Amino acid sequence: MYDFKPAAETAKPDLYHDLLQAAEALTTGERDGVANMANVAALLWEFLPQVNWTGFYRMVEGELVLGPFVGRPACIRIPVGQGVCGAAAKSGGATQLVEDVHAFPGHIACDGDTRSELVVPVVRAGEVIAVIDLDSPELARFDAEDQAGIEALAAMLADRI
Image 1 (tube, helix red, strand yellow):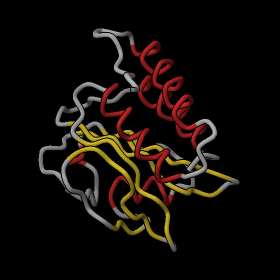
Image 2: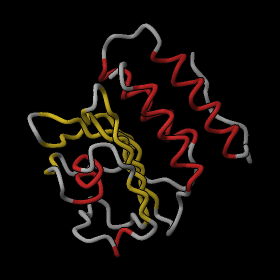
Image 3: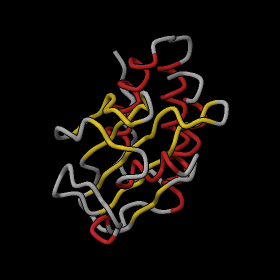
Image 4: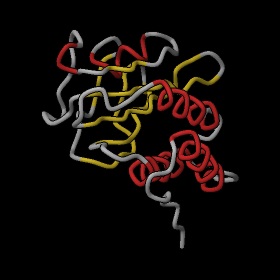
């Protein structure tokens, strides 16, 4: 049995260190990218407070397609360049840290309760192969520490999904 839940009130740097170690442990040696995304989506849900969606969109034939996630049902396909996820994919690797999704031009509302979002591209060989998408019902839930932690996770996963 796996039990990777962090201790309450863990400082963000420690939380992301522990999250990265847990993701490393679960994905090392596993060749199936979908299985790895599924376990990491679950880890993100367990590790991050105040989130209402954690998961992946995969780049498939030039558009983002829903991958493993935890949360309410979501948009299945997102064109590159549309919404926060599409903006991250179009950027070629630039993280999108959005304090208020309702102020983001072209925001796609899959869950009306979402107020802030963090989307980090997963890049392999210079190409975006997926994005990690985190949603929160709180305004400005994500900050630079969250961004750095999820960027480190995306870098580690680039050859595992």
